[in-house]
Image 1 (tube, rainbow, N blue to C red):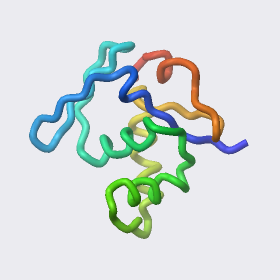
Image 2 (cartoon, rainbow, N blue to C red):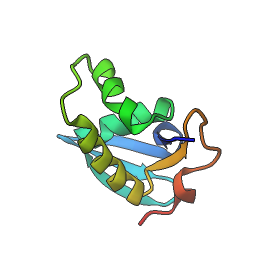
Image 3 (cartoon, rainbow, N blue to C red):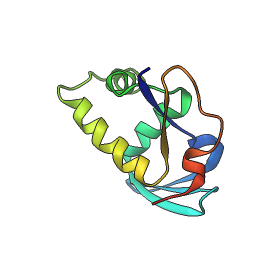
Length: 108
């Protein structure tokens, strides 16, 4: 079974834009994260439905009416690792949304 990634942005976080950054307060962990637009766009796409890494560049391109760039998958993988480390995304079996908060709300 392949893995997908899911965020709980709308359910578990409060988001405020400050200039070119987003402050994301994760209620379960009590942590606030400062994210660039690219990370926020990724969280937003993953908040709707779990997606496999290979599907994320196309989903982002469709959402923002752009073309998926060559090599985008490597950038997505790096961002996912960073977001997973701080508890803002979680790996789930593809096709199934997780039941609880990301990483139990615990951040690294």
